[in-house]
Each structure stands twice: as C-alpha cells, then as structure tokens.
Length: 146
Image (cartoon, rainbow, N blue to C red; front, top):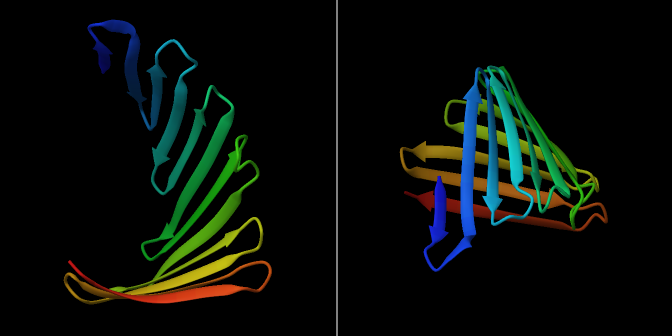
C-alpha cells in the first residue's frame, strides 16, 4: 500500500508484506527514514514475532505457546527505547467453560491475576489484582454488558 500527498511526494507511507509458508514479513516506510520491520511465524501451537521500530533502535520479541485447548503461555521482551529491558511472562487457563484465569509476572516481579466469568452470552464478570515489587497493590471488579 502506497500513500502520498500530491503536493509533497516525499511525504509518503509505504506498507509492504509478504507471506511465505508459516512466516509473514512486513515493512513500513514513512518517508525516506529507516523502516519499521516485523516478522511473525505461526505454526500451531507456536506463535512468535520480532519487530524493529524507531529507526531500528527498539526491538520487541513475543512468543505464544498453546499447550492444551485450555492452557496457553506467552512471553514478551523489549530492547531499546524508554522501556528497554522490560519483560513479562504469562499464563491463561480455562478453569471451566466460561471461566478464565490469567496471571502475569513482569521483570520487576510485579504479579497480576485476573479471573473472568461469563455469566451468560454478552454478560461477564471480571475480578483482578496486581501486587508490585514494593508490595503495593491494586485490585478491581468489573461487570460488562455487551
């Protein structure tokens, strides 16, 4: 996809993607600056991606693994930029149909947990909390109607 302004053709955006087997490659050019680039590989039960942004100075790596229909693991890491060194790992588990548990641990040892229960189609209840490394905590409840 190519977009530009007739009065300023140097001010353009070009998106290019290519899929080859389980991999998808992409690049986004904004003007003549270094592009943002990405690659993702998806081959069930594994998914992974690598992105490079901000003139190839910020890199993000993510991964996902589905161990069973009701059990999934994920991880993410960022190198460069303001959030350099941030990482997290998480797990999602379906306790019973309509009730999901998610937990995440971040590089600073903050732990967050949520439980979502679908009461009926379009009507769900969510409870969650987070404990930070300094032992401060937050929590909340949410009732959603779609």
